[in-house]
Amino acid sequence: MLNILVPLSGGNTFEVSSENKYPKIFTDIDGKLLIERAAKPFLELNRECKITVALPQPEADKYQLPNVLGLLGEQVHTCSINGNTQGAVCSALLAIEELEHDAPLIITSFEQVLDIDLNEYIDTFISEGVDAGVLTFKAKHPKWSYVKTDSNHLVTQAAEKMPISNNAIAGFYYFKSVNLFIESAKAMIRKDVKTNNSFYIAPTLNEVILNEGKVRAIDIDKACYFHVIDEHELNNYEQKVLNDRNQHKDKVLKSTQEYVAAFNSMNIDEVASFLTQTSVLADPSGRFVGKSVVYDYIKGIFDATTELSFVANNIYVTNDHESIIEFELTIDGTSLVGTDVIDWTPQLLIKELRAYLYEVK
Image (cartoon, rainbow, N blue to C red; front, top):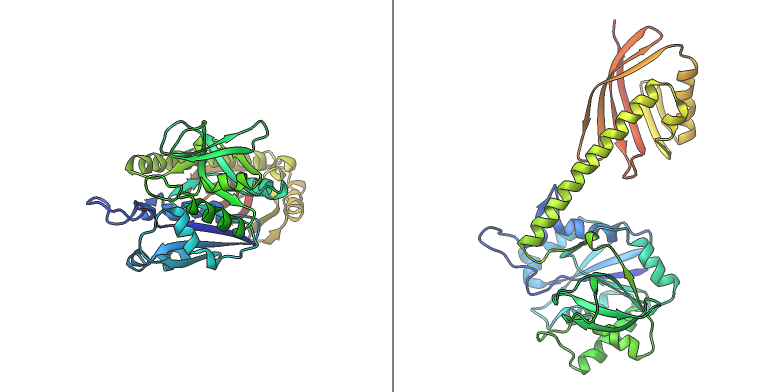
């Protein structure tokens, strides 16, 4: 079991304005809430995990946060903490009883989006047996926390709001166990290591290092990290999402056109290159599941046909990895019209193709 702890109780987390009646985490960005996009990479982990979100009781009630977060996935749980705390470390410690203490721990934020697959990074921390780990990006601004590293990418020092290097922490902390975090956090608090009168997570890494623990840093592309702390950053992220969507729609359109060309030329190998091992094809003849089954079915059509023409009159692309083809199909003099609906994977392979067609008399 992997513990993922999200202390959602920062001083600015629930700020509202005359223009925005709800906190930033509720901003709708192209059909999904910001908090939903922040949770996505953790919900897509390929290992068993429990995501615990620590919430201040008044805001939890006011914004129905347990209900909202519960809709994100069955892995997501909430716990309440009373009032304002003296920083993320204190909020995390108040929620610690909800966690499995001998299991690994990730502490992160839902006021940021890590637009990456986190599986490989977590696998690296666990397989290398390090005591703690962070994801970093290149920066110099004093608003971030930072780590110094040696030639082996092991952290030698961490600091909050102090650029001791150009390795800024991307709001992601790994500890090999909850118990290790508790010990490190308590040691830091006893030393009263505060920044702006608050206890932050980054300095707990120094306690791990002082106890001869290994702390690993893995660098990520800054373009994949979005810390939405103000309206400017929120607007930048929203524009990025819209740009990505439009670029992806262009790619889906191109793949659809290439599929049409492959089918029209009766090139079974090119058609098969669009299939996954679990692709599904459904048409009036039946439902065919699996690459080899779909391959044999389409190849049977091609082998039995002398002349074929597959013309796309219109192609539409939706926001959900789907393309819709309005087509005319002629097979050995028999004319048909219809619609193909293709559900594409993120890798632009056919997840499912549903064909609706009828003969033209």
